[in-house]
Length: 314
Image 1 (cartoon, rainbow, N blue to C red):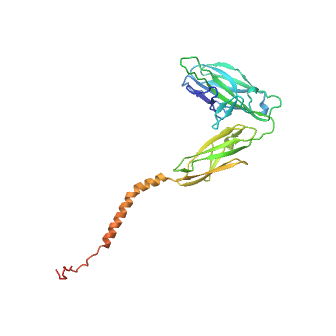
Image 2: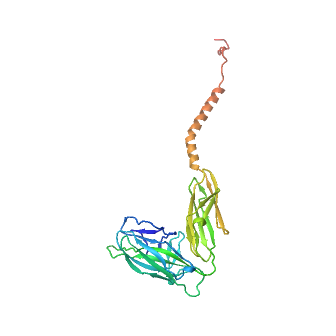
């Protein structure tokens, strides 16, 4: 998977965040025909440096898929994660590994259609705290000095997770599950909140994906990662039957679970049936009432003459 940023996107401002996506880089893909002046791609979209890889060279590939050449600056940054997974650059963030990383080169020019490697080496200081530490490698294309008062730096931030040897705890917990209490129909959106309570980041991917159990069905959430000490909010959808008292739960193996109940009842269909069937029912009622009155009216037996006022035959 790659990250691509096009012209007009606000990618990096002081204190701003970048949207990042988890997943391995796609191999053997052919760069598309440039459609815009600026289009920068970085792969992989993240690095997880294991204890055996400490001190070894890790490589990012930077590809310019735009029509114009770009000047790229490579920076290191501390970050925290928002609930939706976007990176929030914050100096002095917890579990920082920014000062452990060396990036090469720090600045380079990239022609249109060309790619370049950027290496990262992690050197852990003596006696570090075991568990995950992290930094972001930011590939920044500074704004030029053109006309106008607003200049936007464009860039991509890739998280790097550094695993320091020692006891590993990958525990996490589901702290919340939300959905509408009542719905006219589907699809229903269920939003779960997951907090990392261990010493390393936790991946919910592939066979380890988080799943929603509802009405006897198992509905997967999208792949995601929650960093050490962080909380993620993730959503999935479910198509319920026409009428449903849907009880949904989310649980982690050997961990916490939480649930929510949604009542699905198509009131709008019922209202439409009443509006359409009301006149028909009214006509049926009036007809039956008319027939009842007719049947209740007195009748003269056939073959018998009516008497006049004085009781004489007419």
